[in-house]
Every structure is written in structure tokens, then in C-alpha cells.
Image (cartoon, rainbow, N blue to C red; front, side, top):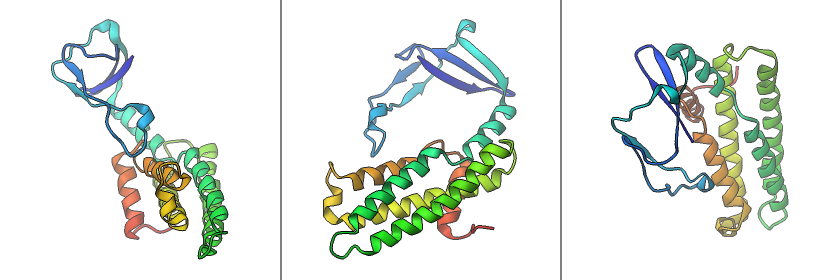
Length: 204
């Protein structure tokens, strides 16, 4: 089944439809992606699609839904911290190769920074209503993503050319880190992420 959301003047209409080509809806071939290949993501072209009343599952005020979605997506997901921990473990193992002693230092620093970010992010998730402290949540997500990209890149460098093999953990983890840059990405998330890269948004 396919869940579609369509925005009207004031409301958001959610409809459940069969996940195959319909009059007014045509899917494309599965996209070739750097990550998420298992998802079999495709394009969906809509042109004159009609939805019956029996297919509508909910109608909600658009402004209310968008505000809540913006607040929810501002949070950094636990999976990002789990991935960072995995990358750090691989960096420690890579430090045993010639010329890679600094990999252990990178892992230690990343683990310490990640722990501080996780503690602050989880504190917001557990103790503050989701619609509050949104700018702070965005900053934490952006800083975590920046740390994840930097650390996974260091792992590829530590593994050298062998890390680019399709069966090497380094390139797989780096591609997984890239996925977190676009997962649940909204305009505010993208802006906060780029501001961290540009060095305009520091920790307060």
C-alpha cells in the first residue's frame, strides 16, 4: 500500500492507495542509489490522480501538521549515534596498521564529542516538549552529522585503498553516514547542517 499526502489550501489530506500504477499515478524504475539500495526507491509521477472518500485515512490542518513535522525532524536520531560508535570501533582496529596511529586519537575524540552530543540530545527528547527548543535540536543534529561525516571519512583514509573495496566496512559505513545527511531532511535541517559546515553556527 502507498500512503500519499496532498496539501490543499488549509488542510493536509492523507490517502491510502494500492502500490501499483493507477490512472493518474505512474511509478518509475528503482533508482540506483549510493545507499538505501534495499529500499527499492522509485519515482512516482502524479497527473490527475483521483482519490475516493473510502481511501482517505485522515484530514488534518496543514499548518499544524507541518509545525509538528518540523519539530520532530529537528531531532537527531539514535541510529546516528550507533553508527558513530561503530565507526569509532573500526578506527581503533585500523590504528594497528603502519602510519595510522592517529586513528585511535580520532576515535577517542569522536567518541567523547558524540557522548556529549548524545547526552544533550537525549535530554531534550526525554525532558522537553517536542515543539520547544527546536533551534537547539537542529544544532545538535547538524553537529552530530558533521562529526559522523568527519569520522567516517577518517576511517576510509585509515584503511587506504583497501577501504574502497565493495566488501570493506569502511566504504559501507561512509555511505551509511551519507544517508543520514538526507534522511528526514527538511529545509531547516539542511540549513542548519550547511551552517555547521560553513562555520557560522558554533556551540553556545
